[in-house]
View 1: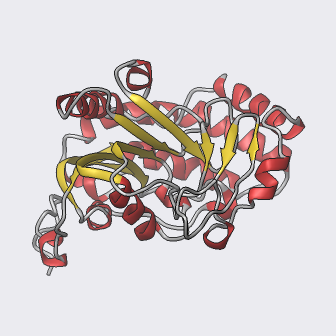
View 2: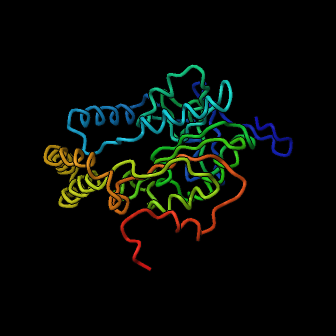
Length: 294
């Protein structure tokens, strides 16, 4: 039940997981979430597909998440004992999250819009069902490209964080459509910084580089050549077997400024602050090679 006396709404619980989706501000249905089982035939089919894909060499690799999340973890523990972290989009473990998830000193609330073995509650990032200044940290990986209103979601993150609370985000840039109808937007490095303009930057940069972006482009070129499910499976396999090696080039490319203009995805690590960067201040942080462009 909502603890706000002005609200008093009741929400469903299924399998011990509270379904706190506000349908007035979400494209997801609370009733559907209540009725769907995470162990049903659809979930079984998806798990089988993921296992089959796991047999193929991966096209992408995130070379910075582990190091970034270690820093996030260290900064959290420096701020006080037993910090509490909200994970948005936590149905599957994100890149580099294993060490943070294994740390018993850190309390976690793992949320998503879909049930899984990991989710503690279901909610939509457009309306996070917690009071202001609840969490010491928020992790949101590969989510903001899938929400209809990213600015509202980041405002919600800002609202539920304590003063100087930490956020770690990773968001797509040079990637083709994934998650079908739930894919809305992309962000350049500056666009990503502007999204988090209510935060003090601790670190930011490319999470996956131009080589990974090229590999994804090759896969989707092949996928565009076929319309059948069998053809898509074959195209995915061919792309994996012929382009998996490209990702190793990012070991070299990520150190070059031009990679920031062509990266597959970006990360941002920051601390909540009360003031916001102006757009002029945002443009001043551009670090790519095109500084001569007005």
